[in-house]
Length: 90
Figure (cartoon, rainbow, N blue to C red):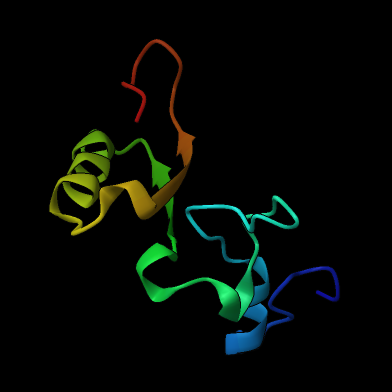
């Protein structure tokens, strides 16, 4: 898929840094996308979860944040596929 960000290849470090974010924005540009200029202590991590009718999804997100050394730097994205009125949401 030519539109996919990864183009079916491992993402290079440079590409990851170009889309990763920093906790604090650059004072000159006000952008959180700072690449190598972002100190290691301020880099964020993104966790993607695809959840299909998973009643434990909420526990997974709680576990991620409660065990992280720096939960303020963790970003979680969930695709929650549920049956409305039957399953609990993540």
